Amino acid sequence: MKISDVLRNKGSEVITIKPDESVATLLALLDEHRIGAAVDGIVSERDIVRHLHGTGPSILEAPVSQIMTSDVTTGRATDNIADLAGTMTEMRVRHVPIVDADGRLAAIVSIGDIVKHRLSELQSERDQLRDYIIS
Image (cartoon, rainbow, N blue to C red; front, side, top):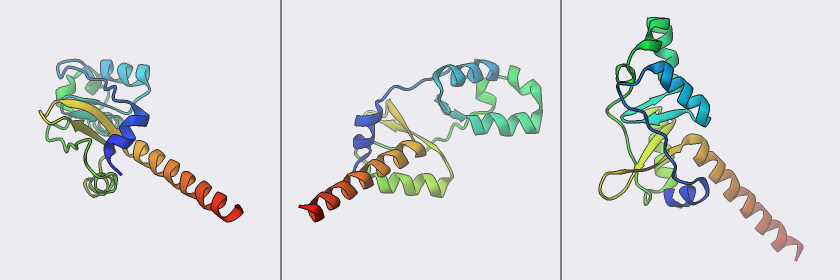
């Protein structure tokens, strides 16, 4: 199975934020869209919490660029789901931007998207086996 299979069900909408926006603005954006990460580099809820703990509340007024990861692991829609899941586990990341052939951002996949897709696959396989045994 390919990442494109996950994106077919999930969609490809990506929310981004400019690096010079404040972390407080980022928090509002994450809450508004009920998402866990925004991209330009990448910054997640985990990044915010880690910096909030280390720096204190003043980090909320800092620019997003101060807390984002700029060396981002990316994937492609043609990548194998299991390979991307392995990369996410190995690199300890929960979100991977998916880029097109020209390197432009096409979507973002979370570990939750991969788990949801895999559970759906397993349910389908279970149903097929049950139907085979019953018939």
